[in-house]
Image 1 (cartoon, rainbow, N blue to C red):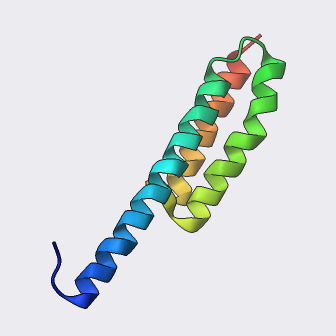
Image 2: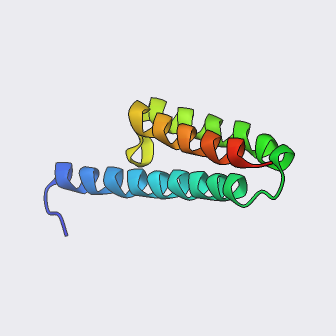
Length: 86
C-alpha cells in the first residue's frame, strides 16, 4: 500500500481509469460481436453506427488503449465484414 499522499492519489486515479477502460473495452467488444454475428446485411448495418460511435469516443478520449489508428483499423475490419455479407 502507498504511504505518501501523492501515491495514494495516483492509486485512486489508476483504479478509476482501469474501471473506465474495462467498461469501454467491454462495450466495444460487445458492439463488435453484434456486427460480426449479424445474419443479414441490414442487421449489421444497424449495429455499425453504435460501434463507430464507441470507437470514435474511445479514440478521442484515449480510453482502453484506442488511438485514432487502432480505432480506424477496427472500423475498417467491421466494414469489411459487413461488405462480405450478402
